[in-house]
Image 1 (cartoon, rainbow, N blue to C red):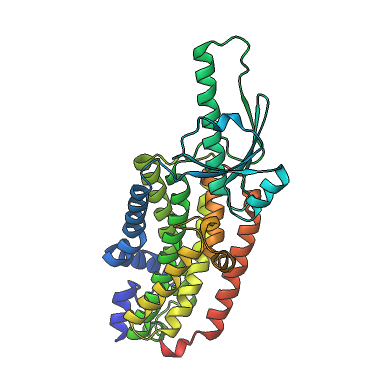
Image 2 (cartoon, rainbow, N blue to C red):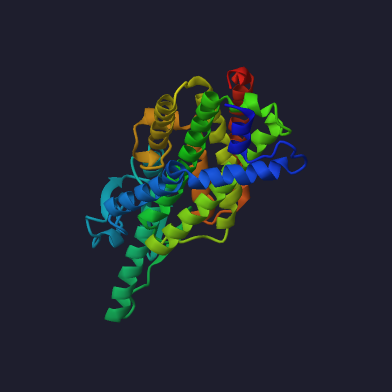
Amino acid sequence: MSLDTAEARTGLPAGAGSGAFASLFKALGRGWIRDRSQIFFTILLPLMFMVLLASVFGGGDAAASRIVAVGDVAVLDGADPDDFTVTRAADLDEALAILREGDADAAVVQDGATVRIYPSATNSTSGAIAAGNLSALVDDVNVEVLSAAAPGTPVLETEVEEADGGALKPIQYLAPGILAWGVAIAGVFGAAGTIVDWKRDKLLRRLRLTPASVRTFLGAKVSVNLVVALGQTAVFLAVAALGFGLELSAWTWFAAPLVLLGTAAFLAIGVVIGGIAQTSPAAAGLSNLVTMPMAFVSGAFYPLALSPEWVQWLSYASPMRYLNEALQAVVVYGEPPTAVLPQIGFLAAFAAAVALVSWKTFKFDEL
């Protein structure tokens, strides 16, 4: 490839100076928009998975919640067995031990007119859903009592120790996980495929003959990916909210910095893969080998509490788990940014560590 070819690919005139970054950013952005495969993997594929999984979960119907009843819980007597699978525990300590083992979604105790609900802390998603469903059951019982106008019959009250307070739709725990997966495949596939193309065309070597530095070129490329990630997030949340009833919290805006941080982490993984792979099929294969298993061990498609214990242990090493948890906390549960500081810390440390590895192992002379 000649210098003229490099100029055509980057859109940067040979005499460009201070406008190099802006010119490169525009050129690379136009290239991304024209690349149909990028649009498919970044936008359409995650949306297809969301539609498919939301349909499989029945739109608004979740699986039966696993409830541990402590003693006599009268409110469960009329419960639909399709909504609740009830087991019994001798006391609250035994019930909480069952929750810690991940073998139930919530424990419930009824003391007169007070129904105390203890959602599972092992998996906040299934615990919140169970708490919401139990609260809805109590509301139904109260409606029946009031409609019957039975004198002296107490109205039941619920006390939820740790839950959202309302029933969750499947889309509310599917959307954050699939968005995290979409961010992952956009970052990993985008970086790995781009690096392989640069190797093939020896672009960075030719770029050294132009006024734009390699650092400027890489900065423009990363900036394009970050802007794409923000657009991807906006489109995804809009479709989930307008098309599938995703209820967005007041802290949803904080999904933007979370996605940017997650994108940085996955871009670093993609650079490592791009440095290893020699062809586009190899880069795609290695990217799939990383992102697909990561999605299943991170709770993106399936609750971790229902997964084997070894899968749950593996998930602690996956950046997708922490991005999924952070997005779910701020978008669905409405928790403030301070509540996801551990997830932010892990993503930042992971991105820095993998970026350092990619920088140390990357061989510019091969490009």
